[in-house]
Image 1: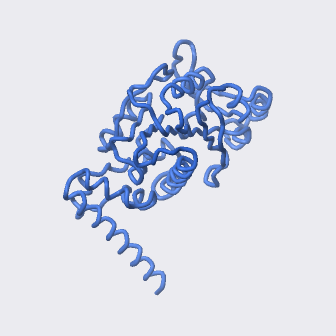
Image 2: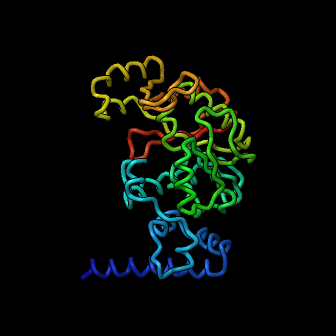
Image 3: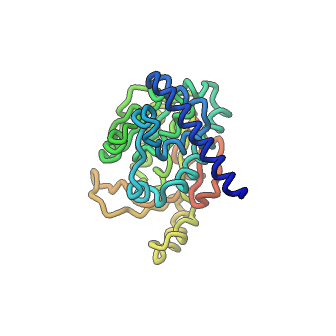
Length: 292
């Protein structure tokens, strides 16, 4: 009986939140998105998993969730499991941002670098106005998926090896989740140099990197794991390119690991202020940096 009561209670709370948001959107987009900033990240995430058609104003205004196949192709999981990972990352980022930056997150300009289909940027609706949110990705299909889903943010295609960004803004917060875990050395250098030119002097950049333990963990590298771990230890950086066409002679995308020492020495225009590893992905370290 208690389990049924819990289920009914959970449904009632979710329906009440959906009704609250729907009522706000009935008064216009600005009112609707403002209502999301009165909710926490988890509540916004669950709402965006799918608004029932009976809440017609919210259903029409809010972005649609990507197909399960798209979610799995991009991240390896989907639905509630992916939402749990995503909210944990965004909550950690927001917490560290508030610790290191004086500009309120509600007023900050935020860039999701390598935004994919928009799984993280939509969670930022709990913290920021859509007009302050920016997302870019070098794959035009990613941006097309965001636009098709009605994701409300400033979206643009970026270069694979950037020297500039497709925006004029200067950002208080930039995050690049599972981006540097895939970049070649040349591309990583280009991205770090470019982002340095767009970060607010007191802003925060959040990246994720893989430790050497990633290589034996991934079965597709079973034959190379030992050599890649050694390269990681000796050079601080190991990279296996995917089968893609090169750009100016360099295959920009693959699988990558790097050390914290490499980050500090390779990109001296940035300083590491904190790092952490989340339990949902022990083979990916979150690194918080600020411009020097």
